[in-house]
Length: 338
Image 1: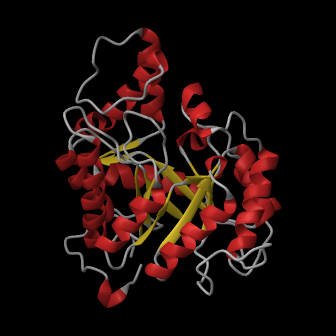
Image 2: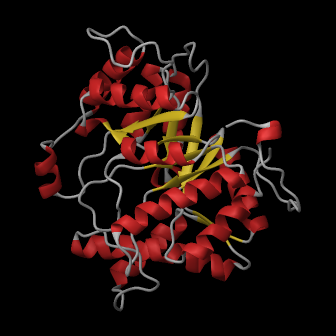
């Protein structure tokens, strides 16, 4: 985003800070007691606050037929957010190439880039629908690494005007592409010379794939060196206990989905007594999150950045209490080194 005079001046910065920039990813999580439309409007409002706080990026996500997530069309939501803001970069975290033809994705990205020059990011991934009925409705039951590599190459060719047809509108600078990566995705991203976004499960495991990504990376004019963004749930509060309360609703929803197959709206507390197996899922989810006071979070993220060599942190935080989420966003923004 624009810096200097256009960037809000912050006062009262805490002693703790991060060594890299921070951004936000909002999945338009629904809450018990509110409609999906209200959830989408809350995402737009959060993006406007994020710009005021000085975050560099605000990304949205693609999920289909999931009760707990209102956003199924990143390009539409990105268009609305970009129209309601003026400086912050807006993008997708991400568009699933398994569900779309590369030409359509390229044209959507170019349309957004034409309307909002220099502010659009294109994050892409390869995840399939959450359940078998969703995958059937989307017409995609499998999507391997080879197909992803071909589609990603086609997407780059359309955005670079080297494809068999012209992605319209023409003469629009291509928005940067980011790959939401697992182990296989990291290999494809390295081959294509693209930056990657890696999430909690990857960060909690063996980091060797990140080393492989860097070794196999093919430099290019758009991305001359490997670039890693780490994405995870981050919650800052006045105490560690309160911050833990903020990440629990997401953990509860994950535990419930493992038992029912339905990823539901956020609740302030679990709907019923958790089984021992669900308790383990909750603890696993918490272990992949960073939460605590501002100083504690700065220390934890600093260590994680040092281990991964990350160039940026993308906070995917959601919680039931929207007011507390806004406060946590403000506290996270205050840790930004810029």
